[in-house]
Length: 129
Image (tube, rainbow, N blue to C red; front, side, top):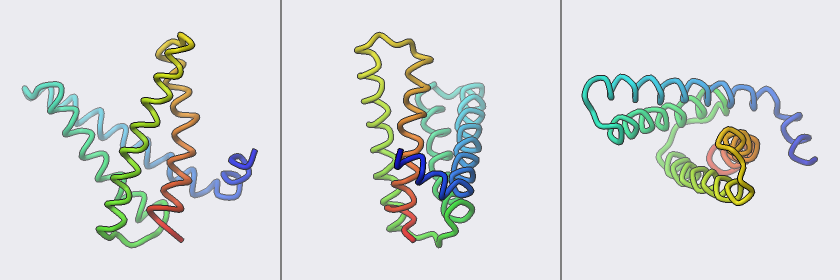
């Protein structure tokens, strides 16, 4: 319940955070598809799309979501947190697989768990007040 209260108090920033996430998802997807159609391997295309989306995420969240200056130390913390988010998603995948949940349900669980945790950690660890 504390999480719901926290998000309710910060709902405008949380909506901006989700908007940035959607933009980054589109960047990742469309760039990866364009690179694949240009002849790049799936791995390189996905890496390119992911990398551009990751950098965009840092900048948009700093400027638009949290209204903070951009600096290298914050970017390092952002990268560390991004790796943590990937690991958390893998953990959700493994736990969900243990219960034989479908991939669609796993994605929902990952979003429900990782999204608010990433928001709180970005707000308090990367873009400190």
